[in-house]
Length: 159
Image (cartoon, rainbow, N blue to C red; front, side, top):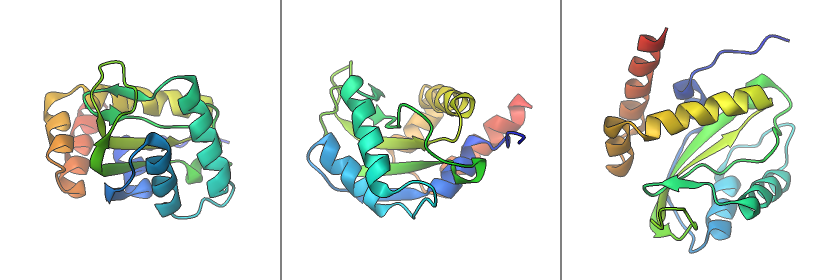
């Protein structure tokens, strides 16, 4: 089966935006986040939550600057079509045990179907989060379409 080369903006379109997510701990936030996601045919919400929490227990997915990238340690989605990235803004920043000590207010949840795609997606998100203009869009909680246009434009310039 060929790997679908779906850019980050397409993955976020599939995963969606979840504003004002509530919770006072990473666990509460992740429970709310995963509970709000549309069903994934091959993965139950409980499986996804358990896998994400297990990964979080190994080491915080807080990357710095108030952003965390929660994800299962191993790909869970059965098909390429089920993979996505969901974006959430927290109602109140939460201590995520990030290396920089900054509380997290933005999450990008990664659900992948292969290790190769997972690493590619993780790399792309990390790259974007280090871009001043994209980081600003996240911190301003810009409309989803504005963020996606920014990503689309950057991805066009890569090809």
